Image (cartoon, rainbow, N blue to C red; front, side, top):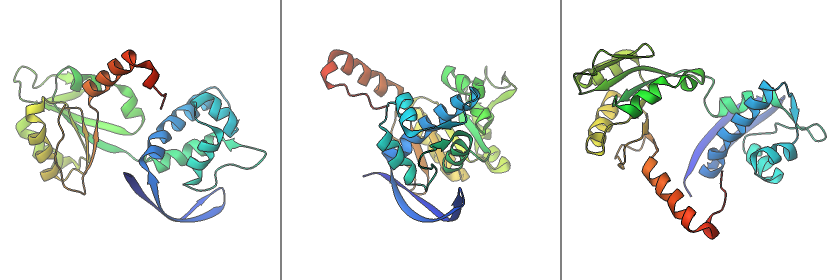
Length: 233
C-alpha cells in the first residue's frame, strides 16, 4: 500500500511525549485535510470542543475511524471531554506542514494557471505563488493579483534565486515533462501537476497529480452506474 513515512521524535501533544516511526497509509493522509477544514469551520463558529461522534456526523467518517486516524499521530482527545478544536486544528496543521510558508511558481499562465494564482485561499494557507511563467509573449508582463507573468526562459534561474520549493504545472500535456525536468534540475522537491500526463521524476521529488479529466470521467461513470458508487470523501 502506498504510504507516507512520518517520523515524530520527542514531540509533545497535550503533555504526552511521543516517539513515532510510523508508516501512515495514504488513505489516512487524504482524510486529514478534511478534518482540518471542518475544524476551521468550527472555530469560525466559536465552537471550542467536539466529540468524535459529532465530528463523525459532520465528516461522514465513523467515530471509530476518526479516533484511529488521529491515534496515528498521538493522543489528542480526552475521554469524556472530546477534542479541543483549536488545539487539534493546530496539531493537524503542523502534521500537514501548514505551520510554514512555501514558495511556489506556476508554469503555464493560461486560464487554469491564472485561476490558481488568483485564488487567495492558497496564500492564506501559507502557499505563496511568486510568479507565473509562459511562452506566450502576449501574456508576459501581465500581473494576476500582483503576481507577474514571466518568460518561461526565466523559470530555472528564478527558482534558484528565490528558493522556490513547489512547482505547479498547468501547461499542455506535450510540455509537462519538460517543465518537470526544469523543476527537478532547479532543486524543487514538490510538484503539483495539473497536466493530463504522468511525469517522471526522481524518487526524492514528491508529485501530486490533479487530472481533472480523469475525475470528470469517473463522475460520468458513476452517474451511469449508481450501484457502484460508494461515497469516499
